[in-house]
Image (cartoon, rainbow, N blue to C red):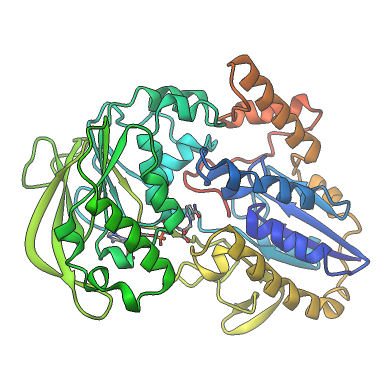
Amino acid sequence: MLHVAVVGSGPSGVYTAQSLVQSGLPELRVDVLDRLPCPYGLVRYGVAPDHEKIKSLQNNLRAVLEDERVRFLGGVQVGPDGLPTARLRELYHAVVYCVGAATDRHLGVPGEELSGSWSATEFVSWYSAHPDSVTDGFALGARSAVVIGVGNVAVDVTRMLARGAAELSPTDMPQTALTALAASKVTEISMVGRRGPSQARFTTKELRELGSLPDTEVVVDPEELTLDPEYVDPSALPAAQRRNVEVLRGWAAAPPQDRARRIRLRFFLRPVELLADDDACGSGSEGAAVSAVRFERTVPDGRGGVTGTGRYEDIEAQLVLRSVGYRGVPLEGLPFDAEHGTVPHLAGRVLREGVVAPGEYVAGWIKRGPTGVIGTNRPCAKETVASLLEDAPELVRREVPADPLAALRAAGVAPVEWAGWEAIERAEAELGASLGRGVVKLPDWTSLLAAARAGGCSVAASVSVSRRSGASPS
Ligand code: NAP
């Protein structure tokens, strides 16, 4: 019997479990551990609530976690505040770390910490009901918001800021976030890229969706777009970027419309400072609120990058969402490549000082960095599982406990098992029904664990919850 632990129940973790059970290995048990009591990682806590089709991927992931050879063990923190990685290695023949990229990148400019300036991750966690989310709300009394970055997360948060109550109410977003967003006064949202439109990271489907939001106009400045030579002549661009350019050209040619909200797509502007309301030329005192973002105009350098021009533009904003990508964090006991925010590996096998560490593997964002869509995790997980299966004859020689769960319990860990998760799902359906909505997510640890307990799950105080903010493992 090969016992494998997969740490993280997001797409990369579940696709790893799927590849394992599809391998045809007859004697196999897979435990999928997650520090949260709920499975699915960024599919539950990252995919925007109005993207129901992508969210429905949960059904595919669910089928894997319900396989008789797979067990979901939620509420298990691996690392210094919980189960040490060294102990985990003793309990299983192999451990696959699928812990994602749990924090956000920083801009490194003055004023980044001003009140009203948030990482997009914090905003996403809030409207996704992540139990570690900061709950004191966002400056939605603001008139103007600036979103820094032009990736798909930037598009998600821009769209969520522009949506009204009627569109948000059918989603599973928590009631507090729905109420706050429904009352939002934000009418101007500027989404700003430091490079040109042909280099933006968003995908065309997501970009196009901005143009179909009710009562919202997308505004682009044709002159700014033409600073990009590949916007002017897109013939050499890959198809995906060419499609983006076509969508932008359509908006550039459209006559102005009189709509309640405007999304301004801006390019060739790099953020240099966030300005405080009482301070037109500096970041101001601690606790001061942001009032604008100062950008430097950039121009293409001919090599895919940009150079500054020494000309500046301030864009008004009482709310700033910094959406400049995720970053992996080191896990105690595992090697870490600080430059890339990943664990060094060879085809998924963890490398310690350049040498393969037997029985330790990685998949997903902690393996390859925070890129790609959900489906990208499937081949990534397959590669890792192929390495693991190659090593399996050697790995099973080591003795491990017959049932790692008993050993986990003996160590004081009381996981939320599948029945506990199903109880959480029932509680969320009941909450939604009581509010006259569909399923509504429970937004905090107390209600999640109470629901799991009501389902007969003996979640103990040992669900040592580290209340870190940020994205859940992917
Ligand atoms: P991303 O795609 O890497 O985009 C990051 C953006 O931030 C880029 O525009 C980047 O510009 C900009 N940026 C980075 N550092 C900056 C700085 N110092 N100043 C100004 N701008 C800066 O990251 P993401 O949007 O967080 O997405 C992460 C992954 O999740 C992506 O693979 C994405 O496709 C995926 N995702 C997919 C969906 C979907 O399919 N619907 C939804 C959400 C996320 P440069 O290009 O100039 O570096």
